[in-house]
Amino acid sequence: MAEQIISFDRMEQAVGLFGSFDENIRQVQEKFSVDVVSRGSELKVVGEPENVDKAVRAIRGLLMLINKGEELSSQNVRYVLSMVEDGKDDQLESMTSGCICITSKGKPVKPKTLGQKKYVEAIRQNTVTIGVGPAGTGKTYLAVAMAVTAFRAKEVNRIILTRPAVEAGEKLGFLPGDLQQKVDPYLRPLYDALFDMLGAENFQKQQERGSIEVAPLAYMRGRTLDDSFIILDEAQNTTAEQMKMFLTRLGFNSKMVVTGDVTQIDLPDGKKSGLVEAVRILKHIDDIETVRFNEKDVVRHKLVQDIIKAYERSEEERKRK
Image (cartoon, rainbow, N blue to C red):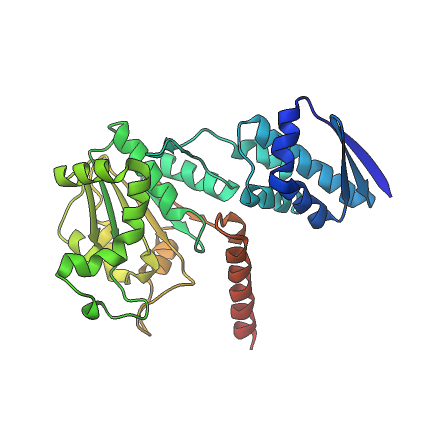
């Protein structure tokens, strides 16, 4: 058995580290099979030497986040633990970059994983960015945050958000209302992200002015989009022809972000995904970057990570057979 001592500079660090009902420290103990004992301004970590070393590195990583003003949540505690397990905890410092924008409720939007940070940097540095990865990795939300930031800084005059209206098992024709009302449910996640960033009233005002447009992909045909920040969501459900049509809408002083999850393709059998094709065809072109997320970048409930892993295992077994 081995033990190590960690000292606190301030009691607020200890309060933030332990979390509600000692939830954060319990995660560290369970992950690395150690005991963590609090004694005044010190923590004693006891267990097998290798486990104690990992636990101490994890606690130091969590304290670093607290010192940078981050509030610990179940998600970022899990992420720090996984980084320590993978021996990448030395990269945690670079993760705590400044916020992208402030939401309508005054909450800062920041990258929460290294994958998200790489994605945000790619959007900043490239004209076209393709984000590929599972649900819950923040692909759409961060892209909208970057769009709102560019719009507020007057770097672009318009935000255009679009996605293909492809049925995920349901039929569009059965939905009530006119065409706009029929396609609105498909565009709901884009509306939600914009409401969060701008507030419903401000969003409405900008939409009426034509500064913000949320529309199905079919509406993009024949247009040239200058001075715009354009986001194509759910791009795995575009055909190769639709993807080419969308990418060639790019005008001067514009940025494009394409997001999708290649494990959730709802196209009819035999139709190739435009996202898969685009990643392959465009990989060597300057000013276009593809960022791939994995289950570690999931910032939703822990079960979402477990579900994604289970589906990946099932897919690998199916391919082996």
